[in-house]
Image (cartoon, rainbow over all chains, first blue to last red; front, top):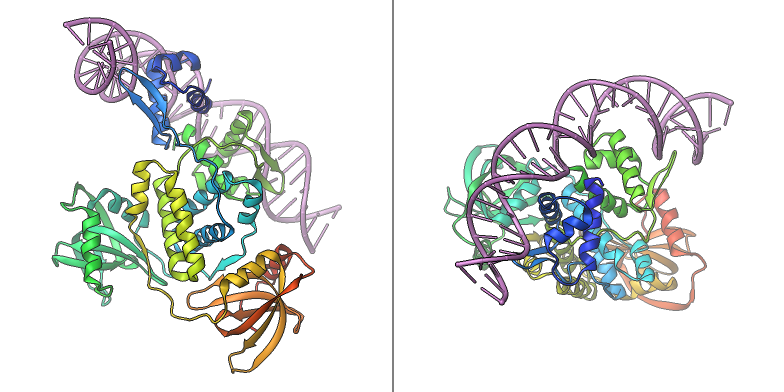
Length: 229
Length: 229
DNA sequence: CGGGTTACTGACAGTTTGTGGCAGTAGCGT
DNA sequence: ACGCTACTGCCACAAACTGTCAGTAACCCG
């Protein structure tokens, strides 16, 4: 059996068992060697399947890792769809696709009549913003999530270019621009960077020395949304 | 991307689209040649996915095919939270609350570590819009859902007030204004009504004689988003 | 009808990657 | 301490995958 088919089968098999199953048993059932089974499990995990393996025990599908059927009110459905549509328009392509994917996954676990509500939602959002981002917003989001230092070349409003090391911790979606919010090592202060003015950037290996949640909190307390680079 | 991962992605992509998608578009999105995409589709079909392909049309995924039970990705969580935050800012209080409620329901079925992602999401939306609505947007949404005629008193840009019977079928959330889109019996044409200019309104008992989905489709085909009352 | 679009199929050669076996590390329960 | 089990690295071989090129057929629209 081809690997691509086997992985789907493996998921099904895991769901069938309730108790932990040993890798050897799964390997036998799917007809591959133990070594390959470990690789298959790793592959599934890397794709988001919540499989837990414990030494001496075996593998278990994390209970609740599949979305259970959910109920939403009509208002809630409309809010979700409207939000997802706004993301589809306002965010960069990758995040936009992620929003649509999430909506599709939610719709998949809805009762039939509610799924129809999703399709026929009548709330619309305005036209798409114009500004072009030079920077890869996905990379910025990744740096924020992993709390990594970014080294950026940034062009200010006068066109002057500077190189900085910054600690990014939030990304603001405004009407016409998107702004990375970070602690700037150069200024030793919080700074805002318009993503369309970030010429290029490189994520560093080292994490920055503080937690992003703390940075966000301190920045919020300043209550100063207007400071620029 | 490895084939085995690509196939799962492809399924999700297919589910995201509602209308038929051309193989070329799917190939481009998954970063693979057209030939390989045809092979991927064939592979999915042989594993039981109900994908229908028609020459000159494209591919559609028949509903009811159970997608492999994958969780939300980090990108998807971020997109949902960002959308929900935008709704919280841009929509009227009731819809904003509904968005927050929906988000809470989703978070409730998430594994612990993902729930933490929701709480600590670092994507922000810009400041709240200013315009005040005179009209009750919840009532408009209700009229749209139930396809009821609305009788409104509307003040145009010159302050001239008119009374109209309209068939509302959509609500547009723009940057600074919100617009009810409806068929106007007075003008016998589609018209847009800024919600901050609707002085008052009364929902009628009678349904309007056409389906809102059809009205929406016809209005879309006009491709004229600028027409006012 | 004819032109444009699209779904499909076959062949082939280069490349990738999947694979099993072996060896070794480490965590868990008894 | 012991057995069971999850994991990881390495390696050589085989199988699978991939893109390109070519060609067929079906559908829609004017």
